[in-house]
Image (cartoon, rainbow, N blue to C red; front, side, top):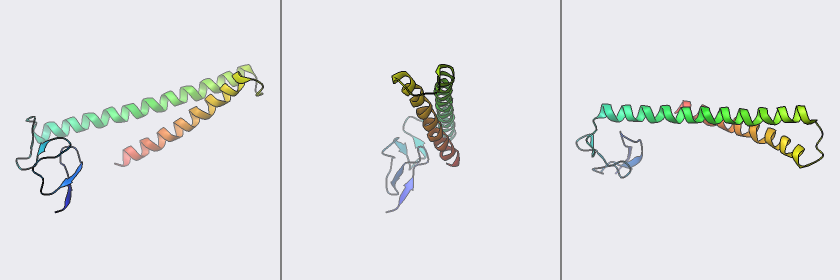
Length: 113
């Protein structure tokens, strides 16, 4: 028994399995249980990939907004850290930059798949 990847969802399954336990793809007839053809499944997977890339890009944009808002507030309100609002500004800068870097790493990893 070997481990293969499902042609529909790329999940690891047994080579002796008749259907994928994740997406119910019929491995014997090379069709999904819902009746989708290989072309329809490929189209569905492509659409899911586009949505995932868009989601990651929107997260990167959101992190930049948080970072830039923190920088703007810090610049306008003074650069010292004296009270809780000043700490919040510095926190926004730190969270925005960390979030952006993490999202960029996730985007690079996503593109390499």
